Length: 356
Image (tube, rainbow, N blue to C red):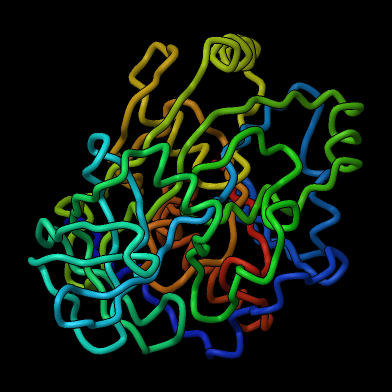
């Protein structure tokens, strides 16, 4: 029988969700589920001990950028926020539309930035959990499409100048600089969401890993709202994800192929690296395109041997991806242990390293 989202439900008190963006590494814990299913909890700084010479760490080199603009509907003047996700062409975008006065309209016109941008709603595609984002239980939202009167370069310039970051209710990212938000390995921006696991590695830590004989591989995944609102009774086999753009270059493929030939471990720093690699059919080859892959325990890993991630929300697709490495019962036992040990959850919480 297929697993459901309800099989990945757990209870944790609200105070377990960390809202302290600048927590020092010395306070962050690491939960490890090893190859035998044994659970270990210690300080995050011990993570270097779990990586061996020859291991290949996969990093997503795309950092977060501003994706959200405020405006009003026309002619009613209802306040809206639009988070731009994926361009469909120069003027049509996949977006998430928010309003704090009820569900946003699905048709009609709008303006953003005091009339600088004009556009029209092209309809609703999916439900969206607006109450989790920006300000708790304040916004209603949906995923859909809009058409605007600015092309992509012009829109991105306005986003960089006047846009805001997307963030969960428990921490406003807009008070931080790009240098504070993005990992040291970032080479480009364009993601709508923050990549937290790799942000915890300082340059000295990366240098220490390099000196240990660990190799580093960079791939690109432009993180956006790839998931849909989970329902407990939905079977994993019936669920679909939204698209994200990925780029895996020739040098990354060559490095990873050497790792596989030598049977060295491939460890993804964050779920985005897993999604990028596992989207590519065997044999591994360069890829530039979009993926809607949903990685669950029903997925057989082709390339990745381990995953470093956070402790995620109940029934979260990232939690379910982690279970693809160690089975549902092991991941839920790990989460139960994390709750009992009063570990911190959410994107600014504690970390988890899961091995196959």
